[in-house]
Image 1 (spheres, rainbow, N blue to C red):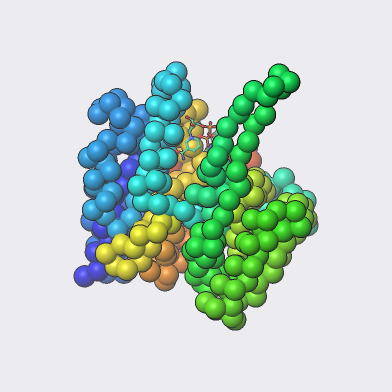
Image 2: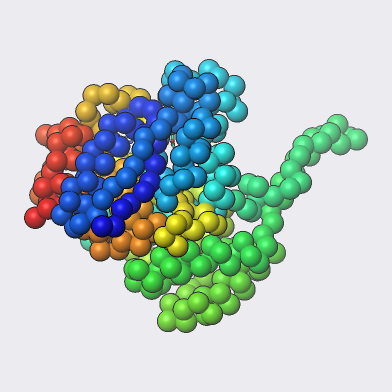
Length: 368
Ligand code: NAD
């Protein structure tokens, strides 16, 4: 029997609630499709600080290294906000994990089901068919990470600050590879976003993306767009895009724009893929909801578990190569929404159900 080995790191706030529902979903799918789950739970974030004195305890990192993927909840909350910034859960847990596994690619699917179109700030006519766009963002290079980076006092008393935007061919090639792989499971369309009319890095970006797509899969329809236009096109007609691939800073902005036009954080998953492959020969990855720990609703069975469940679907797709099972989970979540089940964040003020009940509704649809 196929066995999925992954670590689950629920973290803080709503993390444990949505994680436990998600593990139930995976176990139910496993029993019906004939695969087993082998997962261990470890502390990360605030609970890591409380129990081990570190947001990323060594035991947690070691367990992640043994696994084929990481299913992550979310970390942080008011209890740890007065710690020095470097020790705060998000920075002290997520950054070192990203570094340890060289997670250079962040995939953020922007999905809005037609039934939830009212949640989008876009005009109903623009989103009546829903939204389905995948943003693939490079996250370890570009202006956020480039050196030198400093602020200095000039002779005339002014201060001058410097950031460096830098990309190498290899960094662009590996993110393009991820985009090509993702597009081949979708509509086979990639839009590469850059600012090649002003930035040297973008000129190289455009050249390398073009060569790489041509080499890897010439059947993919590749277009290029300047980032200012892409920001406009995303709100004008989001579904003109299938996969967007872009560098770090542009991706930071566009993926948040995509999240907001999709309505609720409770529905949005994400994947971070690294340079390493797991024991099955698939990309090692970390899978987590796009939202945070939602302290305002934590511990009350009010959180929407769909973002975490959909993150598990991405884990099956990318780290376990189980496209059919990933699509089955996504289909069950979609059907749950279609059948009218709503957690508070997506109910628009009408009747809603709890975290566990949402999970049960997904499982019921998964098994029918
Ligand atoms: P948040 O995403 O936790 O919450 C913003 C709003 O969205 C809240 O009203 C919350 O109730 C709602 N929300 C988010 N996820 C939801 C879900 N699954 N179901 C229903 N409603 C949901 O953002 P915030 O309030 O800015 O941050 C809270 C804490 O989370 C902070 O400590 C922050 O540092 C941390 N955080 C962690 C991560 C991470 O672990 N990757 C990401 C973002 C924020």
